Length: 123
Length: 372
Image 1 (tube, rainbow over the protein chains, first blue to last red):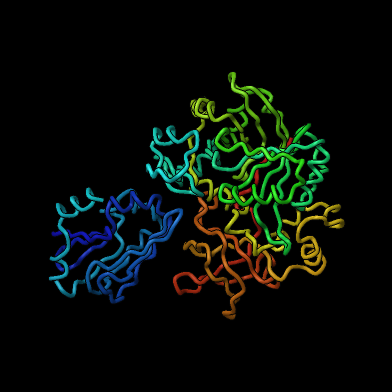
Image 2: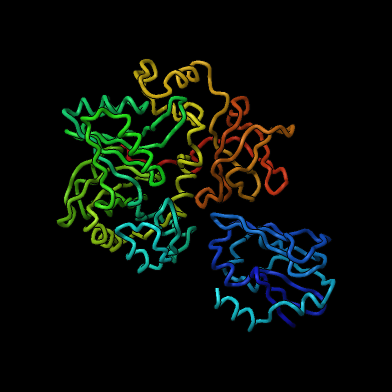
């Protein structure tokens, strides 16, 4: 299992050919209380850096971008009932969607955990 | 935090100490939320009591040769019935322009010898210039500015909290004000607010503001509440936010604020834009501010397009978001008069998708003002 991070604070975890995507603890903390998440439907083709999902906090809506090119396999239905999972378990049950990865080179080029940690410390 | 170009209220240091997230708002560095978070702050205010720093608002005292002269002078600028106010009573009204547009909304309190006015932070400079230009030269305009702080204690437990500090507070009527002493601190306290809950607003000298805030925060049931929850609370209460739900392009009739204009003032006019307002009162406005209740879970934000079921644009959301007490999205906005009836189905264009919604009665959370 390998995890990578984007500069937009998405994480993508690869496990046996299926990648799971969510937002980091840093991101959920900055967003505040999450009240609504719009996840993509299975089959949606994603393009790296383009809109993939929407997360709304009490005050504002934020776009979640696809970390790499690929296709959505499943949106996290649990977020429909309990969007606060994004706050309580951002890197666990609060995941947004699962996807297939088209180009592994894109995945490998993203930040690893140490690089992301340094990145957020510099913000 | 720490942007030195921003103004600070007398409670700035306290906000930082309490761990507030500070954001620029109307030129001030203000707490948008505390560590509790907007959702819990909102719900705490609805169930117990929340303390808000609203010192960024403008406090002004108007004096003249007689109180009647001051009342008459202010009535030339607002459609509200100021003359009808008994001493110690408060009225919500607005400054209008010659087209009937709203320059700002304000609270006016009549005291024995002067009027006390609270104006919006973002409108202070323009309002003071407007008062100077519009009032006779012998009316003095005393802007309290940085000499005064303003606190709001809101929520069902506000009365029990305040009664511990000032027993007379418990029997004050809604929309009334008085001078008082709290633990040796001279204050002016009113039973009013901006959340739909029972509560108080307390004007206090800048030097005493932090001491008073700490005293109130030390009471059981009180939490510090930021501007984020203030906004969701007032939205659920159906109350207008200047610059969003009302501005110079909207008039009091369209804004569903006709209730603020008494029969005498409707008939006699005598305020800027009176002819426009009177014509709309007679013929009905072309559009109206209404509550909008999205049927799904997605919040519809400000500027979201409102369409009828045929896809015609009929208006726009002016305030919208998640209502923690309502437990879902709530909004208000303007729609064509023909679509303004409660229950009218509409659709909201959110991120390119048409989401079903209905025109709804406001408030979204029942008002719980003190009825005596």
